[in-house]
Image (tube, rainbow, N blue to C red; front, side):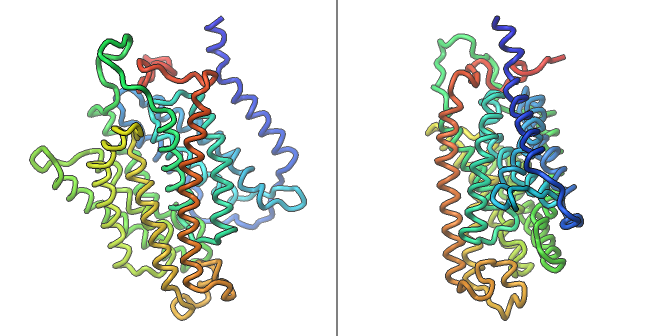
Length: 420
């Protein structure tokens, strides 16, 4: 009987897939040729399925799950996100989809994959999928608030995607926290699987490099003009480059092993520049400004991994991949930068672009100060929704029907996969 139940445990996801099919038949139609030439879709697709997937293969015995559940989650969430996002923009109860819709759904799936990184190895497959479905619906609602209520500038999603996904993940992690194992607890592995091997760290670098290469496309994909697009690409690339140099130098500086590099920093903190510049990459931040932002991101991220992650674990908020240091704090940093640059925005500097980049300032509806306040409120609301939403979702995910993992099953592919 137990065996039969185990074989059927993912059937609810097939039921959900069928429900999505029905909803698509009822509500979804093809759009006209609008959006067919949108930039960045293919590159973003690679980031979601290859970059995020391989980045999370660093655990010594969890690579099947890192890649497999990344694929499973993203494929499910893209379908669900397209409906959830488009719900707020229906015309005559019809959702018209185009390449932009798919791109936005792909980007929204990044929130779930960021959260996946926070609970990597400690959440069961059913828990992950439940969390992904709930997080997507809440995330689309938050995105609507950021975009339509506050009209916040967030072209690269550092606020609504990175910060939201990271703090939602930390909320889930807190809710799923496990009691500290004692030496007399049976069935606890004698080998600590919560760590890398030489080979797994190399495969994780594949993910890092794919993300690093394609991040300019991710940040610039939703820009509204060629000039804005080019500026976003340049700023993102420069920020990534300076964050990388900073991460290597600071990693060596903080090393307890004669100035050697820490692979955790190199796999992750090198990417923090892409997150930090995301919300401001299409603004007039100057090339020097982009480099400075990247340096700040590298410092924040490496220091976070070195000092903050161990402290979070001690107070019961484990963060397997350190998403707080790659997505959370750099996302908040980017959100605060939008406050600064919005407060300095003028029609003289931006010209006709002003209303496209800062939608709230279109036709002078908001002053620069008003736009800056909206940017700050969008960040605060996002953090609140992410943390509270994640904590509640995590508590619900502890229900036995979602088959929470035992201590002996964490960080181990054998729970979910037929191993060779």
